[in-house]
Amino acid sequence: MQDIRLNYVNGSWRSGEEQGERRNPSDQNDVVARFAIASSQDVRDAVAAARKGLSSWRAMSPQQRCDILDRVGSEIARRTDELATLLSREEGKTLPEARAEVTKAVHTFKYFSGEAVRVGGASLPSVRAGIDVDVRREPVGVVAMITPWNFPFSIPCWKTAPALAFGNCVILKPSELTSAIAWELAALMHDAGVPPGVFQLLMGDGRVGSALLEEPGIDAVSFTGSAVVGQKIASRAVPRGIKLQLELGGKNPLLVASDADMNKAVDATIKGAFYSSGQRCTASSRIIVESEIHDRFIDELVARTAQLRVGNALDSSTHIGPLVSAAQLERVSGFIEDAAREGVRKAFGGETVQRDTEGFFFQPTIYLDGRMGQTINREEVFGPVVSVFRAGDFDEAVRIANDTPYGLSAGIFTETHSKARAFMRASRSGMVTVNLPTVGSDYHVPFGGNGASGYGPKEMGLGAVEFYTQTKTIYVGD
Ligand code: NAD
Image 1 (tube, rainbow, N blue to C red):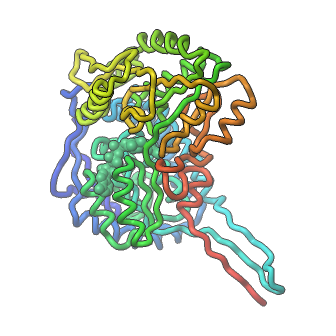
Image 2: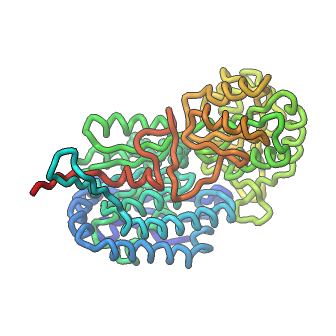
Image 3: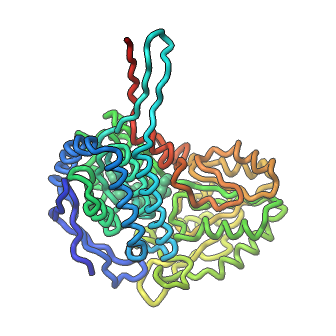
C-alpha cells in the first residue's frame, strides 16, 4: 500500500483534515491508495496561490514554459509502465488500455510544449487609414478543472498541458475514485519545476468541487463529467460570467449500412461498445443496422461477444475489466432491470460475473429491436451494454442516429462514398467517424460534443486555443 497522498497547494504538500481510500475494482482486497481530502482552507489557499502564480508564470519566457512541459512529457514516457499499472489498478481498465492512455498524455504534453511558443495572433490593416490592428491571444487566468474517473490521467493532462502552455494557472479537482493517478500529475509538475501556485491539486468528492466553484478569483472552469453535474456547474459559473467548457455524456450511434464490411463493423462495435467496460463518453451504445444485413450482423456480433473474457484488469488474457465501482455496477444493473421491465429483447449477457477476486465484473450485453422510447436507449448507461436497431433503409438509419439530445460521437460503416458523405453532413455530433469505431481521437484536433454533450469551446487542438486564451484587439495610430 502507498503512503497517504497529499493535496498540492502553492508548491507544498498539504494533509487536509480527512482521508479517503481507494480499492482496486478488480480486487477489493487491494488497497491502491489513501489520499488527503482538501479542506475548505486548502480550497481558499489554492485559489489565492493560483492568482499570485499568474504573474510568475507569465514572466517566464515561452521557451521556459515549453521546456517544462516537454520535461513532463518525457518523464511520463519514462514511467509509462509504472503509471499504466497504477491506472489499471485504480480505474479497472486493462493494461493495454492504460498504456494507451498514458501514451496519449505523453503526446499531449509534447504537442502543447510546442504550442507554448507557437501561440498565434494576427496583424491586419485597419479599415481606417493610418491605423494598424493587432489581435493578440492572452491567458484567461485561473482555471478550475473538474474531471471524471474514466480517463483519469489523460483528461487532466489534456486540460493542464494547454492551460499552462498558454500562461494560465490551474487548480485540478479530480474524481474521488481516481485520486492516486491524478496525484502523480501533481508530483510530475513539482519535479519538473513548475513554480508555486501555477498548478494545484485538490482531492475529494463533489463537495470539494462545489466549494471550489464558490470561491471568487476563478476565471474559467473546464468540466468533464455527467450532464447532471455539468448543469449544476453551469448554473453556478454562467451567472458569474466565468468562462465555461463542459464535456458531457453521449448516446453515440454507429450506423452499419447494407454494404458495410461486416467483419470490420462487428470489430468496431465490440471495441466501441464493450472495451473499457463501455465506460467511455464516446462508447457506441446504439448500433443501427440496415435491415438487409441485420440478422447476419447480430449472429456475428453475438458469436464474437461470447468469446470476450471479462476479468481482472491486470491479467493479460482479459479483454474487459471491471466496472469502476460498486455504485457503477448498481447503476448498470438498474438499467438492465429497466430493460427487463420494459420487455426489451436480450441477445446476450446482462449478468454480473464472479471471478477469483472480489470485483465489479459485468458481462458485455446486447439488446435487440431497439426503440428510442426505451430507457436503455435514451439514457447514458456507461457500461458494456449495446442496443441494436433495425432500420428499414439508410434514411431511417440516419434519423434514428440523430434522435437524441446528445451529440458527442457518431460513426458509419459503408463502402459507398455517397452514403458516407451523406452521413457526415447529416450527423449532429461533434465528432464523426467513417469505417472506424466511435471511440479514439487525436490530440491536435478539437474533441467534444454538440447538443447536450457539450458547451463552450471544445478541447484539444484549436478548441484548446479558444478556451485557454482570450483575444485582445489593439489599434495603433501614428
Ligand atoms: P460526474 O459528473 O459524477 O463527476 C465528475 C466530476 O465532478 C468528479 O470530479 C466529481 O467529484 C465532480 N462533482 C460531482 N458533483 C459536483 C458538484 N456538485 N460540483 C462540482 N463538482 C462535482 O461524472 P463521472 O461519473 O466522474 O464520469 C462519467 C461521466 O463523464 C459520463 O457521463 C461521461 O460521459 C462523462 N465523460 C465525458 C467526456 C467528454 O469528453 N465528453 C469524457 C469522459 C467522460
